Image 1: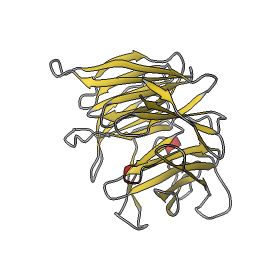
Image 2: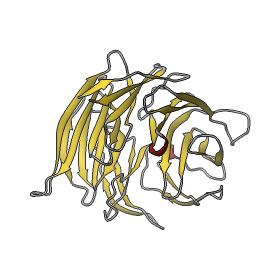
Image 3: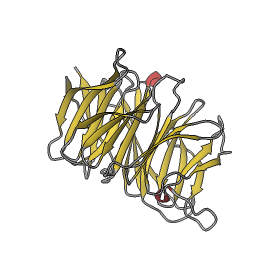
Image 4: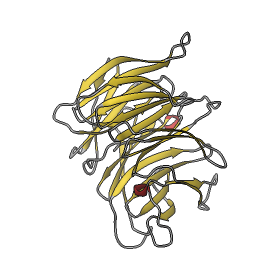
Length: 317
């Protein structure tokens, strides 16, 4: 059972994008970082575990790094790499990478320029080579399997490193591509469009969960690309999914103002993937934009809503 805790105030409200919330727990400092997009600005909040001590920072998307001009931010997310953590902003004009606390921009990559006419809106996936430190970041590969705008990219968040596939990408038409990462990325499977936009996708322990504009969640085996489960989860568009990496809990949020928590597991006897519904919350009069677990176990989660200048938190009791 989850109960609502004190909300975290932010400087400006959340834009009406799906997946408009990113969270990074800093366990050794008892802090949690939150990032929410508002137009060309990313609101960052550093909050103590009890939510009482807050520190705010706003990052402005700037065309060409420090050049004059702004562009709409489409996505902001922390990328946890083996040797460092970066906060990545994807805007209409390019990609900005910051140190995890947002204090220093370490890289700018222009998109849709005459010299580099590629971008996520054209379906291209850019693969970057990130050094353990410093700013010598380069594009190492461009994946060209999608033909529609990219909606989300997700890696396997479990500790199982033996999985054949460890990355999934989704686009606006509903197509999923399953990849094996490495020096050269290898396409494992391409899952056909389901008839609706895949707005959010997550990967955990060889299992892919995909949320669609139809309100359904489809669950696939990443190794075979086989559909195992079809869940009629929400009555309207699914706008966000998240998985707690240590428990396998799945959080879904829809435009029907409902948040649902599911448990995903693989039946050891039949090797089939199964799903159980565990919890539900209705966020009254809020158009949900993003929802994330605040810790790897899934003992707390947070949610943002359109035109809402706060992050609502829930804690397991």
